[in-house]
Length: 166
Image (cartoon, rainbow, N blue to C red):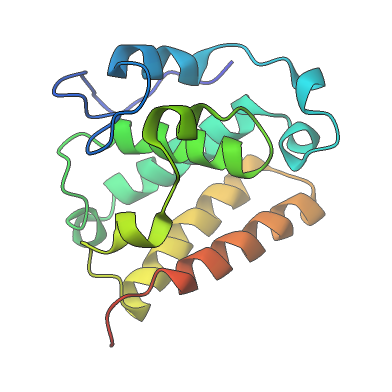
């Protein structure tokens, strides 16, 4: 099971879904993010190989805990409470790596470029984001091949989201 979230949070105004609600309510979305997952249903996937939900929940928790400590970078996040973003990241990553499709069932297609377009993503912000993600990956203690597989994905994804010149 995942560790308790150290960041204060509350469910209000559908923050787990905002701006798109296609599935369960915020409270149901939150509950789905902590529900037990039978890894046998995801055989042969990276999701299963690394340990499933606990790993992705911890990765998202560690990432946002690091972001919360970086006042300059934290200012890019419009939500006062980072917990909804943490849950969205967790469920997106679970789905991307072959786990439950809870993210798309609730929020629709990920549309990463569209969802990040309102934010100033230049090479500096990309690199800071990658630094926080790599720090979180380091803390997971994954097998080297699994850690490098994640790093490769995040590097490519972060580069694709740059939307402002330097």
